Image (tube, rainbow, N blue to C red; front, side, top):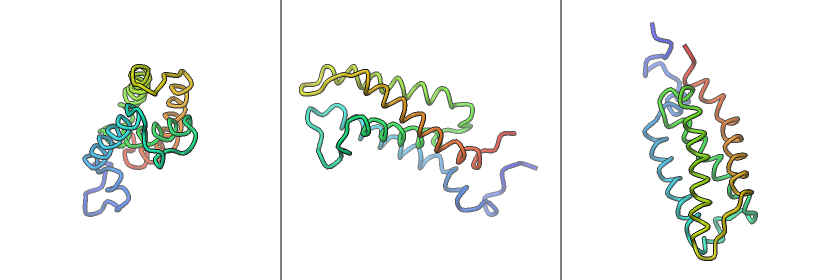
Length: 134
């Protein structure tokens, strides 16, 4: 017998967490939104927290939480997801150095990394509940 219950017996919360297509769609939308905000010479002010580093941390926490739930077997994909997001943050900083009115900063990449850690800490219990290890 499988450790994952049949769909009609699975609690709604677990079905929500296991809805990978929805998480993948949300991840694509978030990546697009982050790219728009990161690569715009003047991003809209209403979408800012008022502190650039908090913007980075919050964006990468949301990306991490979504990415970890978007892929099958998230425990196995953990390091790929985390390193991929950190590389994405690095790419953003390189491109921002080329965008007028934007700058590239190591502190932004550190804020991205802290957001990735925060997103992982928040999502880990959800992943463990949705996908118990066998």
